[in-house]
Length: 174
Image (cartoon, rainbow, N blue to C red; front, top):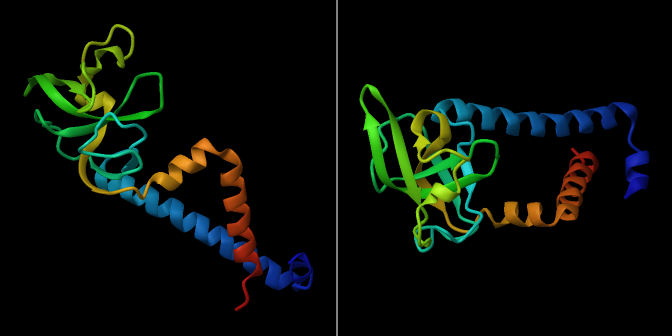
């Protein structure tokens, strides 16, 4: 395997490395373009827990939209707790304000007994729609996100997968 890498001419090796860089930059541009289109910092998220069963299972891939700021009761939103960077997927059970007053939301997981006030930041009783909500769920693909869960639970798998992808790109013949 490494012998074929050593046998590459410098120009061929540079072309393969640039090809790999092109793949990475294309993925990054698609992600940023999708973020601008949906007006969401994270337009695609993975369900990490069973708190929304049976609506969504662990590993489901969710597509978000953040253009409409008039969130209704019953809508499923993804929010970040202030000071933490873990997206939480829960249903809106109550809303306060709106119009000239800032819209505030109370959420709850379908599979949870209580609302999310214990999950919010200290001193926070409600989510502010404009600050805390990443987006509303507009679609999903079941179980596709399990790859992400496996990569975060087993860090060595991420390294192995990236190494395999890099070797595949570098060693491919045109």
